[in-house]
Length: 191
Image 1 (tube, rainbow, N blue to C red):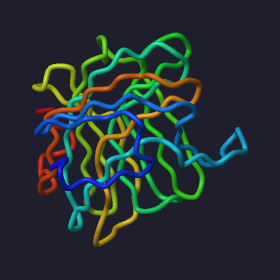
Image 2 (cartoon, rainbow, N blue to C red):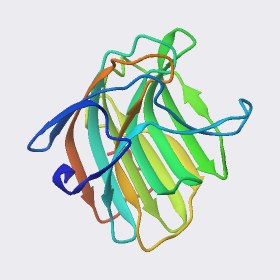
Image 3 (tube, rainbow, N blue to C red):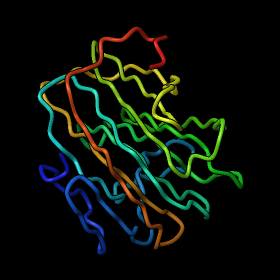
Image 4 (cartoon, rainbow, N blue to C red):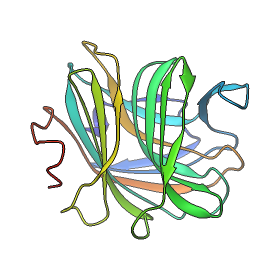
């Protein structure tokens, strides 16, 4: 999947071997639009793969998040005003599960994980005008992290995302990347 990706803000240091991607973040990289802070940033690292309509994407993300706003995960993007990023973000002194849904302006939600999310699996499904985000620590149980409206489109970009607004040098390992037809599992089916 990753060999079809196109960089938005290609990092100075990255490598790919098969379906594994290693990225070291650049300084002051970020994705955010306006809310509370008043600024717009579109400088984070994103390796986007084009889809044909609805889909389910999955990735494994490993990193040692240590400084404020260190973050990595998956992004779904229509354009600079309509996107979602989800994964792990270091905030309030801890590694949190984090999602930003942006439709003209960004919102942000965080929650405390049930374990250490330094090695996390993420699953994002876009179907029927909705975005479904699930996270798993073991690859067997996939609780819901977020359900949000998201515009329908003929094409989306989806793939690994990482950024460090306050520094450079977060090393992130992405693997097990897939994009497939959208899951038809019931919302409360955690498998």
